[in-house]
Amino acid sequence: MEGKKLDSIIKKCSYVFYDDGDQGFKVELVFEESDTKCVVFVSAPNEAILETFSIHKHMLAEMRRTFSTKSTINFGNSEFSVFHLVFLLNEIKSKIYAYSMTNNPKEDKSRSKKYEVEGEE
Image (tube, rainbow, N blue to C red; front, side, top):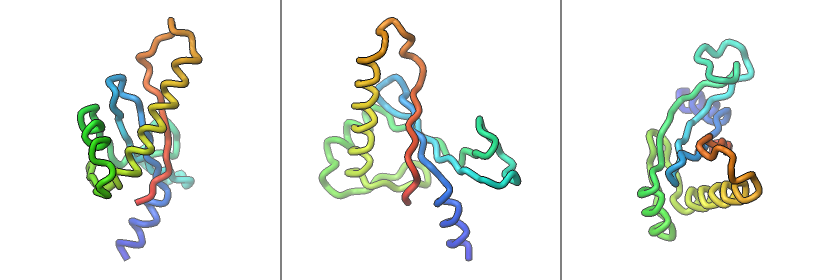
């Protein structure tokens, strides 16, 4: 029974990636509940952060070096395919680069950018 409850919770979760400004990412596992009985709220009235972790630039470089080995990596309680995670992070980085090229260079670049991905554990 516990596995079914966990599966139903995971289906309502998303991984949210924030650019940390140092070539890495801050990642949050966010639970979204449509019911107002959710007690722990974040910025939106129906979200709760279940887990937060960082992917530092050195870890990202190591993952890029070994991404073809079909290995997995754990961050907190989440397990990711290194290949798929590197592909996703590279896509996010390319969008950050494209975004910064189209914006005014005098704008403040210190604001973190948010990228949301549906959870698939």
